Image (tube, rainbow, N blue to C red):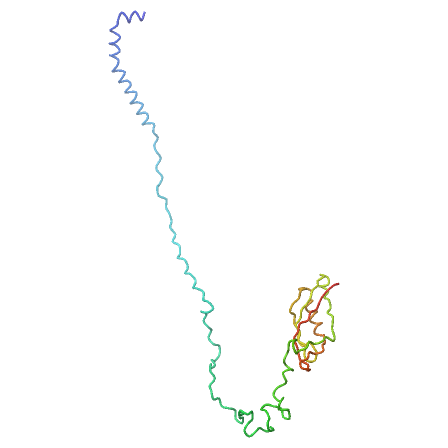
Length: 240
């Protein structure tokens, strides 16, 4: 039936579509405008912007301390002032001699002699002493020799064995103690000191010193006369 109407009234359908076209355009424009207005009304109010600047407190720091002064070397150290009176560096010449004294001449005598003196005497000598030995004792009474050459070694006459310290015995310590001793003209140990101790514990060095100081010798000799000598002795500590 529709096909029949369309075929019977062909001009009326085209004119109707053309007549409704402006109304459709206006209707679409109104719809688009309403959508745009609705979007504008739907936008929420933006929040207030936060403050862009944050307060900053600036604290001024104190200046750094100055560097310490450079250390002085030992050569730059100032000498402390003298505590007492300053003595002269040079001795004044021509110091007056004590009254009543007279310097000996080149020959060793004093003009006019001295009270109690004899011909050929030596100033400072002992009255009645031999002029050859009047000044000081012989060298052999104070000099200490080393064994060797014309100096013969002393001969041990009496040996005292050291006591083994109980602490060293319990620890089973063994070793030697080397002692330097001075044997005087009478064969007595006048001086003694420890040069080395391989035990290193337990009192062995002290025990060795006590024993060596009690030793007695036939003294060393030089040109058939007794002399003092310095020598080393060894004391052995053994549990065998």
